[in-house]
Length: 434
Image 1 (spheres, rainbow, N blue to C red):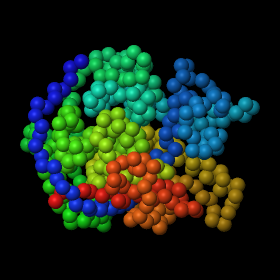
Image 2: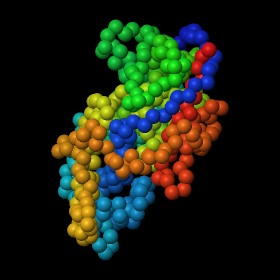
Image 3: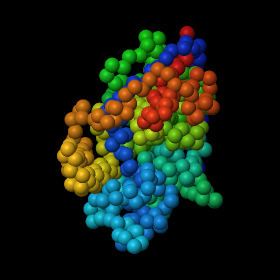
């Protein structure tokens, strides 16, 4: 297969000595809300797919026949009852079927997937182009298929349409690149620089930075960051094996790869655990996980939903996507449908209890088009209470960081009785040049 040629000579960039500097974690309520509003969306979509992707779709599926791989947050029966606007339950034996509203939205999603099939193929192709081996494990691609906006049956419904792009290995475990397209080997950062003027290949490019209100960097870190931004930009589609390990230029290329991966997702975010596995498959240098915490102006690490999610800052204006992919438009409508079910369940519970506080319902935070129209500061106070008392300056090393080099970031673990959400990573120590 045609591959991108190796760079003939090493790029000389001084390897810098290091000065210990602390990069704090600062909470961004808007981006936390981006993550929090998708609570239960993954099990919801997987359940929907189990009901509606069969040919022909069944009228009802026994509860015990739902795939065991669906990560229900609690008992499946309770989950399905919570979203009565999407799922209908029938007794004896208990079975679940989609409502008309859910089936109609599924058709809208199928149309959006069909209309963006070429775009999905190009994004998947570019992801394979980032891999030095020009291949990725199929199970890993399947794990990120919701992030990439791929259909649930993409090995059958997408890959066969692009035999010049993709092939499966003989054992069916690897998704392999067939053709390297140089015209697609332009990163999102380079594309933006070209649109905003005067960029030529090899020119330095500064990443877009933004910080939450009140966030401050140590002056030594700010000085290092300013100099780091002026380093040459090495495209993630170029071979980086010639770069000196543990150098600032290698770090800048690592940031470029992670930035490009997040840019290829429809929601411009990904769970950190999955991003780490993908980074390992892309053969990023050891310790690359620490890069996320060292660059809070580029990546935001949210600790909502009892996990860690990496969000690409520049893709959002507060909690709103700057560019909304058609697939995301449909997902916002799914979220709207989910909240309708919660609202109906809340009203029913309020009628039964008739407490002194009156009827207590869950508000609908999504407009008719599925987009969020709450006020800029209208985030969930309950979530603020969950985070109250978090110590952003202390913690113990988490399991996924213990294997990293000395100086890895620390994540605090909650004491008994707290919410159980991971504490923020705050000791992202930058080893800054002297």
